[in-house]
Image (tube, chains in turn orange, blue):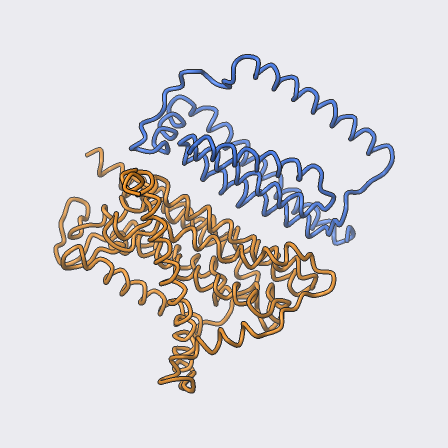
Length: 347
Length: 174
């Protein structure tokens, strides 16, 4: 046993597994309470109280929900492609969990599973795999509404992924690295702006004028990538009944639900890391995890707030916004950021 | 550790690639192709080509295969369209190409298991290879790089022209 402990590879693997276990446990708990938070916030936005019957303030509502889902009948429609029907819900959760492994929750190496040179690319790769869950779920259900929802989602996610990728490039240029740790490190200290130092603001990417538009574009595409309102066209209950997950019930449906909320957490984490200084804040470095949690909570609240305040876009408006507004704006911004970074490093 | 991982990924790659060819249902074939791309990305990662591995997933698994699936689902192909003569020609061509591939693979194997230059210098592992690829791409291979992007632009314009042209005929092709 002692020999095994001495082995460096074993140690790395052991701590990675421990961290993965902790992250999974914490994230699953957070997700169940996220649903509670969503229902509470939505309730108050609509001038009602939200769930308040199970436990004090309705705090045990998530447990009741999970219990209900576990005992619900599992239904597989006739003519469905059984294998794909089973795989699709798993695919909804898998990319989000993989991306969590590179998010720095606090000062590394303790609060991070692993740091890779191409962290941003891993995030993009996983978010591009996220399309499969919805497309395949919709196709395998053998239902026209589900298929329409699936097709819509692939069109939507492919269109918005481009703008999202392009809105990340200025950040990569600014930090001159694709590793999430380096990007967080590039945002340390007071704001450095074109040779000036502004001491009352932190050096976050968000506060640099040439990176403000990318942040806005990233935030908009974020909603499209997670299929949340105002971009929840794939499930549009008014026209597609429930879209891609219309035929799903019980825990399979719960996996889709879990996937949506996991994706919210992951994409908010990435947004925080890229633009809002990651775990950095005032005070000693050990407080990193606290700052991270605060920023994440703010972002998640923003997600919920937007969902219950904005109406859904029409499909052609969605495509116009993606291809004719966000994409050109993102391309122009890549050029601007390139010029700014070049000017800074060559003068 | 790495050789075992390589064997795992390679076995998965071969198995999924076979399934792509052998499976009757086009959608299932396409899904196996996605798995094949992912295992190839895994092999790239084992060779410390992280950038290439990630781009492999983003471009092939994430973008191209989604469009493939989109088309297959849209056309609602349940099975391959099989008619006598075409099938025979297709099979013959398949065997011929397979044989050719086998021959070239045999020739490569006989040379002693190296596909590229034997002493390819590994990029510095600390910096990652995105920087190295970028440096080479924008200096030595700038011209081919630009030509490729212009080619893609032309293809894009062509696709738009074709799509527009069909619409202006006035919905007779529905």
